[in-house]
Length: 399
Image (cartoon, rainbow, N blue to C red; front, side, top):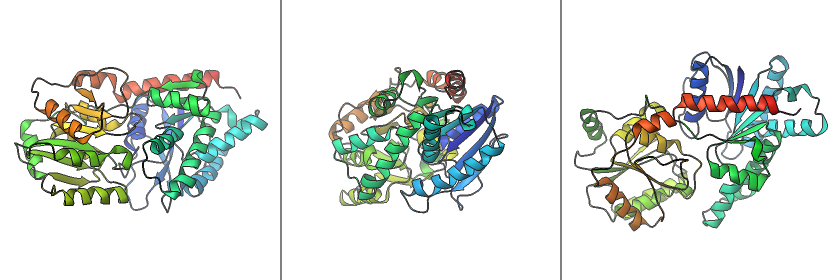
């Protein structure tokens, strides 16, 4: 099958969504599919990752934050139109808002020119979040929203989602909650909506030896006796990393917080100020952006992974932690089935978080069902599930 993938986040850098489409592409390439990709690209990010026989068409990323809709997305649209004149894929698989103007274009054709050749190829849209749901929850939780986001980015993100639902032959959602919200807010047809959780590369994310753990801890300035709490990902208001900084105050001094990932500049400054004013500099280790292939080290040296988010889709960082054998304490979502070693926060009070962390870390009988994670969440299995959605889209697409 010839697949055209449209995705803004493609490595390098390995942050944000990038690992998900990359791993899915690797599995689809191994299965013998022919894949071509339109992706966002930082000119100075380094050599672009090109797995197997995959062909990449890079497009320069937005010059200023929040301008993707009238910069990179516009360039993508015209490059796509030119590409389609000479190419006819079997399926178009788009992730997120990068393809907003392609969604609008195909919706226009479906309404006024349903016989168009463009519509003979079905479109599958992958929802890693639902913009309207995030916007509503930010307001309900009274999270700060910049004027740029409130009057420009969020409305256009919702616009993109709505037209994606209209244009798509099938929609894939990483959580059941996201699927239900798309039906509620956008009127998505449940018969064309599919729930497929994110996967994990269990060959990369795995347990390691005590010797390697001790060496890596020393490299990070951590003692063998330290109890390490890990938070990995882009730090932002909705992920509530500041609550972990607050929680550290209620824990014994040998509990250390390891923060891996970049962050929104304003929120990162808030975290730094909290650490400084609370005198916690010796108990918080900040690593910053770390390339995806190197992130397993952070999980391997940790005693627990904690994600106190207000809301999530299905964060890949959780399956990565479980795959490394690290118990995970999370909020803002739930996996489709129970996994030993995964715990959910029912309250985001820092003292409660601290008590729950200590209970898990000091319970030596706790173990993670690594084998179940490897089988249930492998990328090869995810690729097979996505393939079934492709077949549905091809058989049921009306054009």
